[in-house]
Length: 110
Ligand SMILES: C[C@H](O)[C@H](O)[C@H]1CNC2=NC(N)=NC(=O)C2=N1
Image 1 (cartoon, protein in one colour):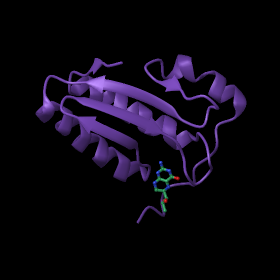
Image 2 (cartoon, protein in one colour):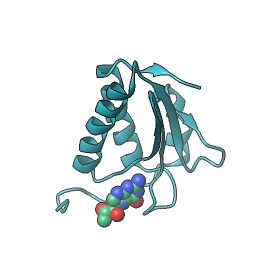
Image 3 (cartoon, helix red, strand yellow):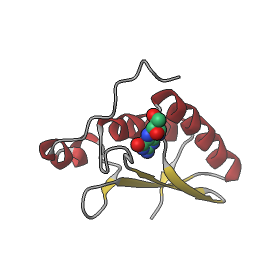
């Protein structure tokens, strides 16, 4: 189904070090195996609309978030299970998530 996509490529240490510049809204988890972002929306409908948009991006990229939702809040953790750490797919999904967050007027949470 996703035979057209190359396999996930692990990030090099220099790429991990540059993540704060590349993805300023994301924080690196201790150990640098994952990044996370916490968002708040105007209400549950907006939060769920955002999650639906992210779900479509995740399918397109063949890369899926670890996330949770409570009413108007969504917390997202990105890691690559296949490689056991951060990969280019995490960056690609984070960029798609940032674009969707803008469209759904997300605010920073936490
Ligand atoms: C078979 C399929 O391509 C893989 O299982 C993909 C699907 N989505 C994924 N999502 C995440 N976050 N990590 C993975 O390693 C991963 N692997």
